Image (cartoon, rainbow, N blue to C red):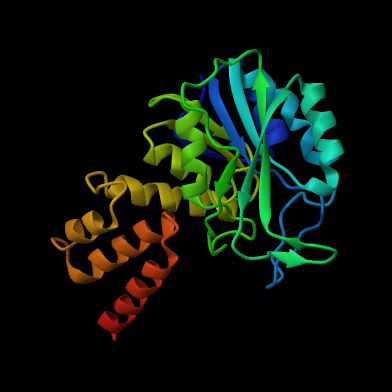
Amino acid sequence: MFPINEILQGDCTRVLRQLPDAHVDLIVTDPPYGVRYQDRIGRTVANDDDPSRILGAFTDLYRVLKPDTFCISFYGWGLVDEFFRAWRRAGFKPVGHIVWVKEYASRARFLRYRHEQAFLLAKGRPPIPNEPLDDIQPWVYSGNTDHPTQKAVRILTPLIEAFTQRGQLVLDPFAGSGSTLIAAAITGRRYLGIELEQKYCTLVRERLANLERNPSWPRSSVAGVAQASLSEPPAVALDSLFQWLRDRDYHGLASTVRSAMERYRQ
């Protein structure tokens, strides 16, 4: 039995071995890059000290994908040769490269680093889409509020919509804060996440539960969400609106709502 609409806690290199073949329609994932990343406030990423500890997972990722489908994997450019070896060894064929352009530099050394990147990896021969996705995409800053390398839901939804249909299954084996799962749920796809750290599994379940609590809210309209929340008690309405905005990366509006929450509770 393949688990659906769940987040599983554990090492994905072990969890994946328990899953049956050819059940997944799309993989979207941001694995550790093997660079010992540490953000400005000292947060780190589990299993980020050695890429060989996680890159073997791509063999099982290839296995659980259906024929003629895609895996989209972010990667660290400094170790792209190791990622490529792992992808090809698993059976994947790189067929595209996506770059997200930032309006700011995330760091600077020899160059100012203003982009993120992912490879589009094919299993078999997927059909050519009628309207291919641009390989240059705008970056949306997630705020990194929940995870040191958190991806914004709004950069993931175009990927899911481009390469799956409603009701199909999206897998993220390095789920982190759960942005891929949120994007899948918002776009009407089924999802499965695997995450090593229990604290992030708890966070993901809270984010998904917030979506379930508000099934009638418009999924793409902030104004619609605000209007829908007026029928709730003020404290509940503000809290629900704050969570909805934060889960969709509207951080400026979310901060305004949080300030209103704090004033109301004083």
